[in-house]
Image (cartoon, rainbow, N blue to C red; front, side, top):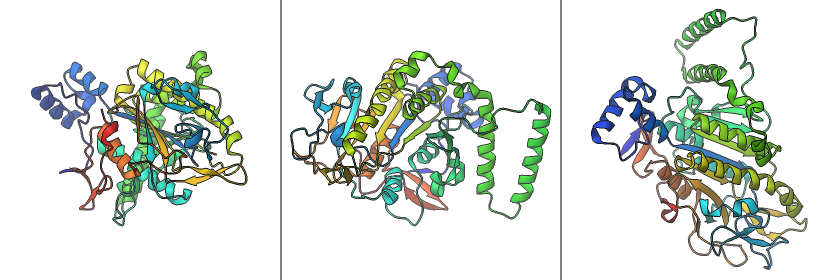
Length: 430
């Protein structure tokens, strides 16, 4: 059984590499990091095979019945039609025509059943994978991936979260892993404040100030637990690295055609920003969209909001494929649950964890696959039911990790990385 006590130095090696090459990589990585390998060909290959994740979170829950699992003409179907997709015999809702056109590149799980209908408990449960309670706070998926795979040696924050509103360092995501594995939040996709050095502050003065800061931190840590101080140092170093990559946050360098394809609304801009971060090598990019909790006026709200997902999501998948990134990038589009089949008195749909859908694409998956099904009226799963633990096992497997044999170790306590009583969703794996 593999114990994760520190990041792997060489995650994601190509199986076609020879044993001698692999040993050379391991030896080089141990001393200098992947970027310092002597053989540039092997270094380039390892970099190319580095796994990445794009996690798109629609907070509040988008309706599966208006998107990936329509039931037109049934008692709960609603007013929208179902349209053909690029997968013969499979239909999506008419609000997602662009995604329907690339369905052959996607993997949809239509039989998620997670049993938690509250936002306050459902959101953390879904994003942590709900392993058995061990008396500790588990990390969110982005922090888990950063720890388990080990960050790439590209001097970029490995876990970045694009979200509306304010940004900042989101250390709570890391749970028991410690603040070091938190997310760098980009409020509205913008870089951390003060990323640009004032003209009055030259490089020499910056160096002196940084040395004083480090000295003060060393004094402060004496006799204290330093996990938060270490996290501060890490976040400071990451922000400093970003001063050298200000191009990642300059919208004027984006082609006008890309801006048009993705859309000027927040989610479109944020998914385009996510593509840029993935291209730069950021390991885990999370994009959050809010206001999907449609207890009232569900159909008009979805008519307005769903196209803001449909067009940029389809553009993103096409772009990742064209740029050769989709093969090694896992894309996850999901919420904390689905919406009720029953339409309430306010023409809304309420919370429904019993039967809903998750959209996936990319690394380790069978494209053009619909896994599972729901009953004719969409109320319940037809046969198989998959909880979030199954999904986490599957995500880890797509990234080259076996959640049955890989463990965290927290203060000497071995902890599973996914729910022990669940397993991968085999039918979706390539």
